[in-house]
Length: 345
Length: 275
Image 1: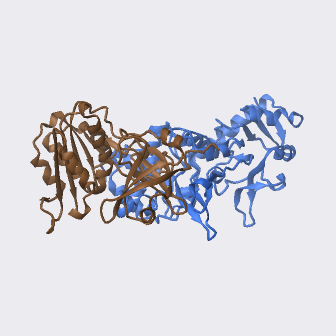
Image 2 (image 1 turned 90 degrees about the vertical axis):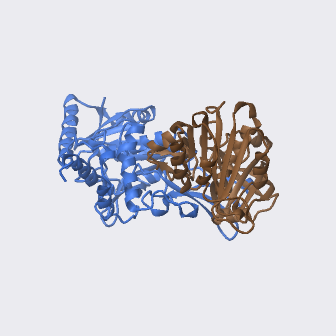
Image 3 (image 1 turned 135 degrees about the vertical axis):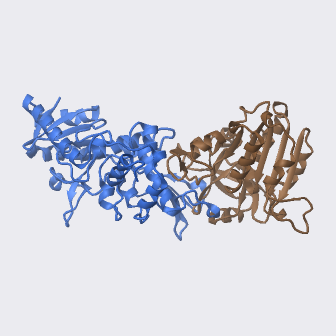
């Protein structure tokens, strides 16, 4: 069930909610780029915005995160460091949402990551359906879609004059009901408008990539395909950094001259040569080709086996950032092409 | 203070045995007796050892869980962290977390004859299982141990190799890749020992541990002899950093080796794209 809030009142609502935590929302930088950023007042928060350059991954798995501190190398002085800031995320897109709910699974299945969970339990996720996917978007082929909302505390749809809002969790319900005077009930034609917006977004996405695109059997993709792709790979790692579903990290100890130290984890990337290099220089993924193949195999083939969906949300950020044009969208298209030309090459 | 699993626990170095010019075996005991009591492991599992400020590395446990109250790690000096550990003396405190990994499936091979093939420092994880087998001698059949290293100076656990060769129904063969004036034993790769043992492959399980270049050759020879693929058990020693299946460094064929491995049957290794 949807409620309506006029756009003029959204910032009034956010001003109320901001008392419960730090607001993280799409904000325009001086050069025109849009990023998710802490907003101390809702004044500069964008209600209509293009896709932020980066996902909100860094708020859940920071680029560098302290696990614990110590001094004089002594294990007995070890103190764990947790981030328990409550945060309100406004303006997430369905692709951002899916990445968070997948991180919930990843960081809790098999081993429960206390650092992730401390951050995550203090969040409110306010997701806005994606009326205007851009040219690099293909979430509809990755098992989600422009109005995917599973796991959002609050899901909203931009109807021009106002937002249709639905709360899906107790936290989300409280955030709406506590300020119910800001909302009115949605009418039947509003529901029709939502349906219309979703369909027009979907048709735009279908223009980017056909929804029923099929990947070939991975074992049948010959090494020549990866060799060709790897010639354009710089091993820069930017695809991993911008990917909302890349969670691999490195662990490093740092110590200053006063013998105060900390163990941190930092983002890492499977396309780096050192990622799998061991003592004695033994490396199972020595060439760029091996690493690229492993990266795409993990996201497109092994992820579905493990989780039932790909390790990609179709956000298209790797397409934007990759200097060699081997982002996920073009690779999926080329892989699909491999089937149709199979045997004819 | 409830420590999460990524924070290591303090362990004291009780004893250091020099095995070779670059390998030492460290005997460790957790400083908190409760940590020591709670530390239960299987042969083939590993720990993450820390020197805070320098870093952390995965090291397989070389002691057998059948001998309680302490933990032994054989560490080869190969990098910055292991260099630091080698410079420590008895009484020093290190950080330990674990145990991690699946360990050897010793229950599955109950009643089998057992062949161990080790190369270099690869004897360290096997030593845990070998001593476990000898401590539970009645559960297992004949034992054959083949061990090779680059030269005589790099042989580890030489005293124990002698002790094992004196055990009933046990054969131990040792070789070095390159002989020298002090060495009077076998010369050649460890694979040259395989034709020299007499065994009926169908009654045997084989455990293979060693440098990555060695393992495929040994497995190939064992298959040729008639070993079953699910009776050849080896380890995939990928780079393991977190030990809990999150950091991604050990990922192979969609599997986190630190969680689902490092011990695999050859039949499983093939599925992961090995060899």
